[in-house]
Image 1 (cartoon, rainbow, N blue to C red):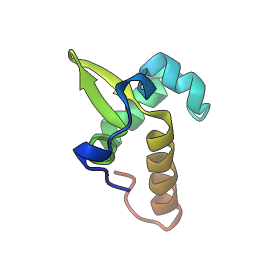
Image 2: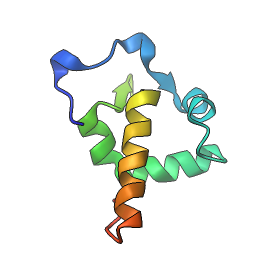
Image 3: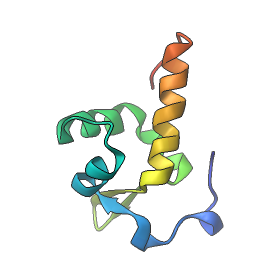
Image 4: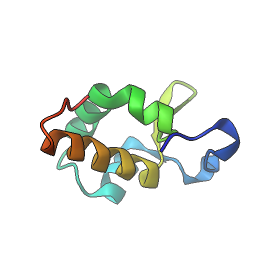
Length: 82
């Protein structure tokens, strides 16, 4: 699931948190999405799902969804959610 700089999606596919939350549909509030990002920041960044543009967080919905599924799978197996 990890991407390399050569394989990152185009910048235009990344969204602000508010828009990404609406696209993903899995987080009832913006704060719940922010909580998920805090808990899983490294995995989100390593996969290319999370980037910073001028200090503002941007998410790629497709890559973020993959991380959400993986974190949920680990949680279901009794593993750590981070």
